[in-house]
Length: 93
Length: 373
Image (cartoon, rainbow over all chains, first blue to last red):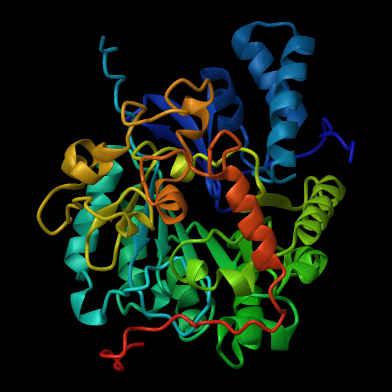
């Protein structure tokens, strides 16, 4: 399957997946059934904007403004991350 | 020449075996041959304390298991306490007995995830394996309610000679029931499964075919179903890192409160297990003799000691090393570098050739305890 997340997709974190800051290890985590994903600060920022209302495009715009970074770079990173999480079944769209 | 002790990582998972009572009698049950009786089970207050201590220690996932965990009258309260403590709760259930009746309350209490076992897809076969009539209809109804409530569902099937022909049907069932994950685990031969090994061991050809089916399905179902696959030990080249390495990631609390590095650890004689009745979980994690015994690499003998895989598989499984070589400190004989490796391969092949109608020894409480379950 080569389908990729599109800009107008609206991602959301499904029930059973939780974004959490882990005090013991000092890292952001995405908790899912039988697994957890360590998130760096940027990934945590991206997921913090996933609310079931914003589209992928909205998320990219918000982050490009926040980081004052080239939109193409942000787009590549955001789609890369969200697409990977979708393939792992921890993100819906 | 002693290297400085690496800092002890915090455990990530806690397997809470709330009870050994279960309506099913699966011949590969991971519970010990000597089951804990109801009268010896921890009470609600102690479980609440243990779960709070687990959260403070850094545990992320709690697996509410058994036996059948929904048999406990306080299962909803225990689940709610996980949610209040920030713990990710995973209910590992057979879906039979009173499980369905309690499901809505569990979802309301904040349950994060459900893992439902299937013994097979074919009804008669499933009920023969589980030793319980009418289990299949209850499981189907339970699965339907899980997804109706919006809870994420994982299907779990233990694979052996009696159901390996149903591999593709099991995958189809997981999709049909709306599961996000499927866990297909070839039987690990400890306890009851070890007792039933000659009735459970599949042939090499069937194992290879099952691997092929899973590989194909993984690609076809990407983005719909994640398949976690545990390959059968005896046919492997290298051992698995049992429980992610002894005393590195997991703690297992038994119904009566003993804390084990893995669910089979009590098969190793001479290990001293501490109980949550006497000590805190943190104390047990850092200092319990059972956790210290095979933690890290200092205990290793050759060929593990000088092997460059020693921090990948951590010497494999201690319980299996004991069961198959008589020495819990030996290299897991599943490993190609073990001097016992060829013998294990031959044993698997011989037992896979045993007659197809080899009878199971069903799981049961010892004859003195007819009250449970």
